[in-house]
Amino acid sequence: MVRLSIVSALVSGLCALATPVVKRASLQQITNSGISNPTNVGFYMYVPDKLVTKPGIIVAVHYCSGTAQAYYSGSPYATLAEQYGFIVIYPSSPHSGTCWDVSSKATLTHNGGGDSNAIANMVTWTTSKYGADTSKIFVTGMSSGAMMTNVLAATYPEMFKAGIAYSGVPAGCFVSSSGGVAAWNSTCSQGNSIATPQQWANVVKDMYPGYTGARPKMQIYHGSVDTTLYPNNWNETIKEWCGVFGYDYTKPTSTELNTPLSNYYRYTYGPQLQGIYAVGVGHSVPIQGAEDMKFFGFSV
Ligand SMILES: *[C@@H]1O[C@H](CO)[C@@H](O)[C@H](O)[C@H]1NC(C)=O
Ligand SMILES: *[C@@H]1O[C@H](CO)[C@@H](O)[C@H](O)[C@H]1NC(C)=O
Image 1 (cartoon, protein in one colour):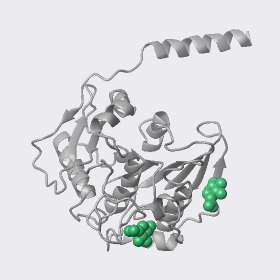
Image 2 (cartoon, rainbow, N blue to C red; image 1 turned 90 degrees about the horizontal axis):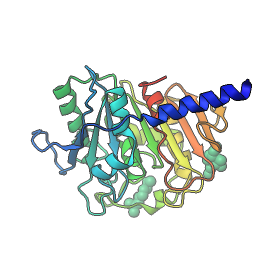
Image 3 (cartoon, rainbow, N blue to C red; image 1 turned 45 degrees about the vertical axis):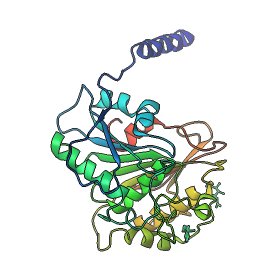
């Protein structure tokens, strides 16, 4: 009997898999928005056929060498948009090598005229055009896109309600001492930019001086054997957001083993911060779409 019910559960699981949600609409490039776009970031979006009224928005930010098109094809967000009715904005980096600018003063400043500003302007335009629900505006990204996720959370805290960073570095860690745009920073990439939670919190706060409002809750993924952005970047990112939120990074409020996958450890530091450390995983941690939907509040 027990065995039978397991089999029937498996069969119904398979039936569910046999009728997957598919992308119906397509990726569109927005060329006539009229937004201020000082660095000429490509503006692409996916509006699902099943758009809900007052939709949410997820900004999905690609990795180095990626494009909006590549992240649209290679990540689950458009399919999930069809299921949950939100809009996905896919910005496309304008820089050679197509890493995001997470190093210049302009991009590391609220309304500073860099890539972060261009992306925020896309969100504002989309919110107004589609009557989006401003309590459901989120950002996620991988690698360079995860760096930008942390930068957007720091520079536009009033805009985003949550962010999920897959294998990035702390906001401000890639800063270029010579003001370089989209510059690589080996000190940071190799995990040697080390600061206290308070110092990191000041880096974040200096990106939007005088801001005292709410800030997005954050979820930070990293692999323990990442040799592109060394794993200590996870620890430093946790210190950064713990500093911002006033949490003790040495004392997570809960530690869940094998969550959401085997050998992943989920640490919760407070209501606004979770870190997921993926033991044995390199660069980058694979996107956990169903988990993202829970963290953003689209599913339970
Ligand atoms: C790299 O970033 C660190 C902060 O993480 C900064 O102190 C350093 O000056 C940067 N290096 C260069 C070459 O810009
Ligand atoms: C970073 O945190 C992980 C997970 O708690 C831990 O295993 C690792 O030793 C830490 N790294 C450093 C350099 O403290």
